Every structure is written in C-alpha cells, then in structure tokens.
Length: 175
Image 1 (cartoon, helix red, strand yellow):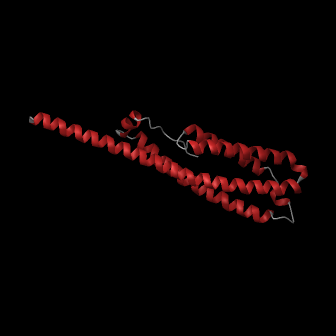
Image 2 (spheres, helix red, strand yellow; image 1 turned 180 degrees about the vertical axis):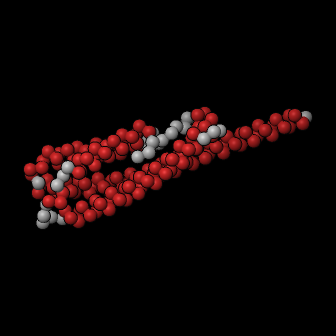
C-alpha cells in the first residue's frame, strides 16, 4: 500500500466514523424528543381526566350554560384526538402543530365557562388541581420545546445537515 492509498484510506475511515457519529447523535436526540413528549402526553391525560370531572360537575350545576359545556366537550375530544395523533409521531411537525391548535381551541372553550360561580360542590378543589395540572403541563411542554430546539439545531447544522438529509431526519415543531 502506498502512502497515497494509506492517506485516502485514513480520510475515508475518518469520514465514515464521522457519519456514524452524526447519525447516532441525531438518533439520540430524536429518541430524547420522543421521551420528552411522553411526559407531555401523561400530563395531557391527567388534565383530560380532570376536565371530564369538571364537565360532570358543571353539567348538573349549570343547565343554562349547556352550549358552552358542549363546546368544551367537543374541544376536549378534539384535543384528545390530536394528542393521540401526536403521540404516534411526536417528531412530525404537522402532528404537534395540530395539537397546538387543538390546545388553543380548548383554552378558549375553558375560558368561556363560569367555573367560579358554582357553589356547594367539589369544584374549588377540582379547579385547584386543574391549575396545578396546567402548570405541570406547561413545564413539560417547555422541556419538550427545549429538546426540539436542540434536535432542530442538530438537523440544520452543517455538515450534520448532510447526514440528516441522507437519512431523512426532518425538523420538528415546538408547542
């Protein structure tokens, strides 16, 4: 083997090892993104159960607000369906974007209910648990967004960008 062949073989080995390292980094970051979405998913499920309890309490106490309650039920179903879709593909930008839109619709429906005006029920305790759940969800979403930002930075960074395109790694969406 000549010096030129040895040099080319060394350069090829370095390039192959770099590609393997870049690929492993992207896979690790994507796996972390999926794991972080698991925490978001769990918080969504907990909040959904609390919202169902709130709807049950409010439906008996607020007969006059039936259209608003129906809108909240529909928003809950839509957010739950969007969560299921995003859980299947947490790295897909369209799935997370649809979850973000469903979350905005749910927040709007929740803001239209007079939840403080019902007396003599377990509603104050439930509202406190919902507030705690909302805070935990916001924290989990923040961690997910930080992980997505790190993943997206790796996908867009040159020369890792070449490996990302070669192996079909795409940018993810934040909440």
